[in-house]
Image (cartoon, rainbow, N blue to C red):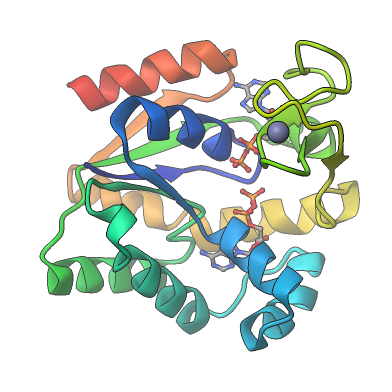
Length: 215
Ligand code: ADP
Ligand code: ADP
Ligand code: ZN
């Protein structure tokens, strides 16, 4: 099963993708995570992406398209994947169609997670994750069961993203509305788009997504 989770920054795509990975034995392909790994490694791609990401703008289409195409070819994707953060522009959506056709794959579901802008700012500025295993948390909405200890791996170190600050969030939301929202009609016209209410509690959003996938 191949899925796209679509939605603005902070909508909960990464949070839900983690549940879907376990539930359906498919892999999360987060272009944001891949780009952050490239930045951390200091690769040529990372050097190109770093300033753009810190400013909250979009990395050029050709770079992310190549990155995701290579990633889909890896053996762990054979059972299916969840695209999280890709496609983010109409050219990326068109390139995705082309590469899937070439690879003999198809899209099963495109799920839009709708969340109001004010809530997104709150979600992004409170977001942090485990430094060891990467599991996500939130200052108000998703606390570890034991304060300061990761539920998943027992790690005690946490980190925040360089771009998760109020100033950058504004740019990222503007980019979303201008560049990414136009891909919604693209998928709607193909009849594959379903929306879920991303304002609901985390478990409720999971249930809504499961209902879409079952339908
Ligand atoms: P995205 O991958 O779409 O950018 P995340 O999954 O990282 O978003 O979620 C952003 C932040 O909001 C995280 O700190 C997460 O814990 C929190 N969060 C995710 N879903 C919800 C929800 N339904 N209600 C409240 N907070 C949420
Ligand atoms: P969020 O879901 O919170 O917006 P991501 O982790 O998906 O964050 O993306 C972080 C940053 O990485 C983006 O602001 C952008 O600079 C870059 N990025 C990620 N995916 C793409 C993409 N598909 N196209 C262009 N830039 C991307
Ligand atoms: Zn952890």
